[in-house]
Image 1 (spheres, helix red, strand yellow):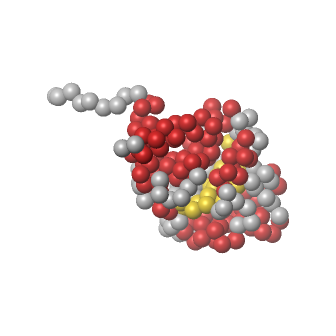
Image 2 (cartoon, helix red, strand yellow):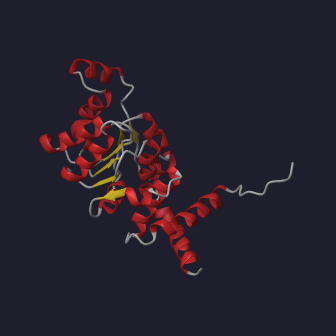
Image 3 (cartoon, helix red, strand yellow):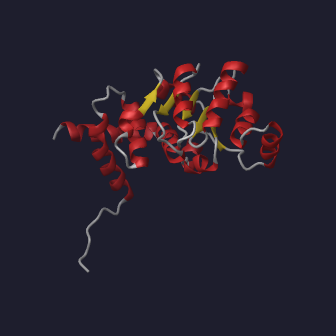
Length: 225
């Protein structure tokens, strides 16, 4: 068999990926930090269409970075989001990612209230979400519950990353987020999304200080071609 030549260095792979993605985000009138968030969704999905589907409220990325730099905790709807978030990056910011979806008490509450476990989980987090970051990548019902907490009980996360995926309620929950959210948000229009995408947004925020120079280097390389 002929020898296949391919990139083996992890940093080189990532840099090449971001270089290839950059043309899809460079004309979207984004800040460098927003470019990083949009690029991460494309990178995580392998789908350049995400560059046109990401939606953020004004200054949402900046607010998320500010919260993380203050040590904000990350509250996730499912374990797949939690496990996708960089643990070393969390540690650098004195933060942790939390998920209670497998907790027996959550299953019990969901059964008693006749609601989904993800709703019961967010309801249990409650006021603990104040000033923190919520990352939802799976369950539209979790997003609806966080918005209910915000609108009816005055809970105020620093940022809602609401990117549930699917064909039942996902697009509608994200439209509702964009319509009524009293706090900053990052989302993806339509039925696309998922746990890897939600985790990629959190990671983009966590990596900010480390990655700024890398992105500037990519921008410079593209502009010189």
